[in-house]
Length: 334
Image 1 (tube, one colour):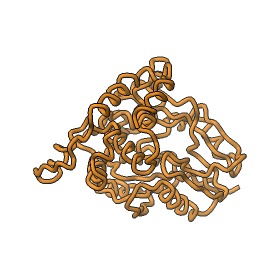
Image 2 (cartoon, one colour):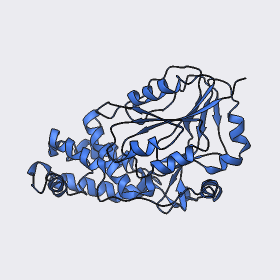
Image 3 (cartoon, helix red, strand yellow):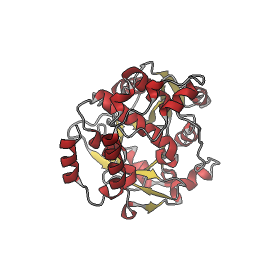
């Protein structure tokens, strides 16, 4: 049997804050790293070009489009001849470094075509001393057999998951997720998510949108666990910094939210919990000091009360979901 090419598939847009770390880590296990860049303007492309294993391709789609970028990545991977193990990771995700000595990792290189690899997703808290995980594994890997892949608009499976495909659940090697290590950056991204939902799923109730995009405030002590040294030490022994975090005054998602507000009007988003930011002031800074009232907070008293109640009740939502009260509130708050 021919040697399996391990191919990392990664979409990028303005990931300079972590991309160097990601590429240094991925270069230890991947034979090829395909980066689909969506018009980054923060130096991400320049970072990617520094790595010998990287093939940089352009994602010229002007809007957020998961199926389009997944198609680009898959097509590029399938131009590489021979057996292919596809591992689809975002730039803020790293395999745990214990893959370096893991017999399990060596075994998955020999699974049959069409097999889907499921990994535990370790959501790292700020400080990277603890984490929480969803109660299910995620399909990040696929021993390619040429199966078609049709992704969802958002939060899609990244690789083909054919019906009836063999499912391999890894127990030793996991995926470190760095999104929550920079809490302010994460909050900026989740404000954008909420606006995206309002634009693309206009019938979805704002309470459901809130609950989904504030799930990180529901993590209780029972779901929090310490990070094992072996998950980071293999990288650190090779001189890779695994714990520093880059901060910025504002994040690129803020610019995107301002575009949404300018195009649709602030009242279109008054029921989304994005108003912890003074968009009037943020817009003034980005507009050369000129204030623009179209970015002013449009919420009325009822909007503020509902968002206050959601924020207050979110921490207990994981322990005892308050779906009954949510249902009643949905009939009132339309």
